[in-house]
Image (cartoon, rainbow, N blue to C red):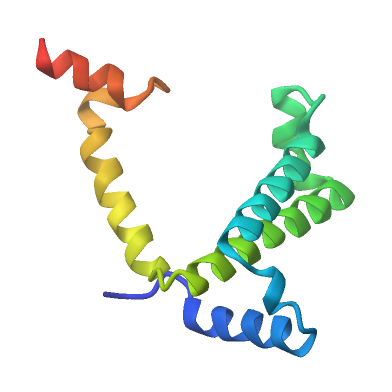
Length: 126
């Protein structure tokens, strides 16, 4: 299996960062899940009143793009810390999830549609 990103290096970097600051005691799965949700909300706040076109144009707005990159980094940091604490192999989890999504959303049925997979499952059961 090929690593999508080097999770082990990131885990070690983040664990060392927390250890040096004596933050390990705050990094329980519960606390990290809450922090991850807060950061996702901060990401959402950036887009809150934008139109679809404005949200797409964010890639060309340096200040907005930088804010987005900071929030995405925070989200990834907390997710990786949680995976480390719970001994979850994120590369394996990502690849398995993509395989599951491939089954739930077959391209020949879902192309051009944003419906939830349960809609397609109902179609195949009927």
